[in-house]
Image (cartoon, rainbow, N blue to C red; front, side, top):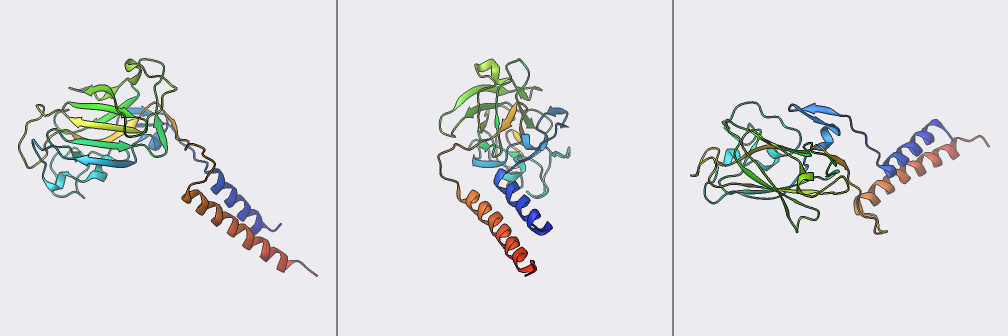
Length: 232
């Protein structure tokens, strides 16, 4: 097989295996063993608090995703210039981990870290879910405490949660519309985590089929070129 064919075969194998590597990092002063992969990837739902709705500049939902990047400025001129999402008084935000799951650690260390920013850490209740339908409370983040040990609520290293719901406590941080109202979420990170493995139901997902076909198409093309180049 030519070098081109070998490269195509390697690329196809990598696509099929979907191998990813993560390196431990200290991010926002917190040690995350899985580094950048530790943070929530998707917003499932967001309902701003009716008791106090933030200005539009503070409602950029994507600002709550990925690693924390708060720049120390609690004022936002636009969503693009903002680094956090304000929940509003009583607002609710549901986030999902796409490539990893939150687990317990079988000890008393923090497993989940909520990066609530601004001058004050406003009280926020925290619920976990396996499927985004049934929710289990793990208390709240209050005062200067932003981490949660989910083992304290009966979970352990075998637990696996993909969904986290954050709800602003109405009587914390004031009410009223405009500006930054309610908890300001910069990021949500799973300290105790492992890669997410989709359930094996025997039928590949459409995205998996697409990667497989792309890999095999490249391999087939390389093999055809190899045959044409062989001396007769």
